[in-house]
Length: 121
Figure 1 (tube, rainbow, N blue to C red):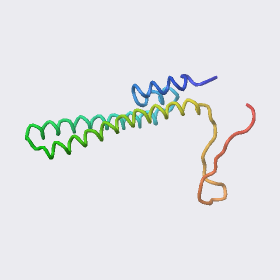
Figure 2: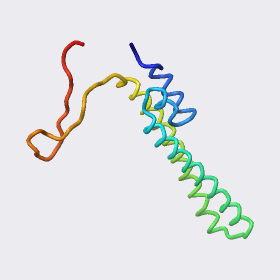
Figure 3: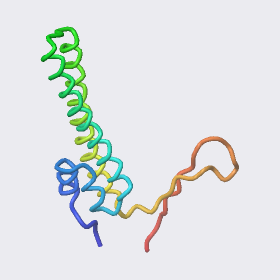
Figure 4: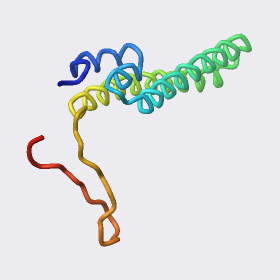
């Protein structure tokens, strides 16, 4: 049986609401992370806009210019998290039934070992 949504369906879900695509493919913790990051970026964008409005009302052009730069940064972060959530949902759908594990090497050396099951059911 395949994943509950298609990769593009998961991508667009997370593009609309970051974390929705991950939740659809049984990755609720990852979904909560992306939702939180997007919400935090939008909250900071809202706060920065309020500070920009205050700087404009005060007539402080230097401060207003700095706030406009901050606003642009938060817009970029919000777009980044939305796109990154979409791409992660797309990848998570492709790896939905992957049973491999990333574990420490059995000899205790530094690094990682990847366990990939080979064979049929």
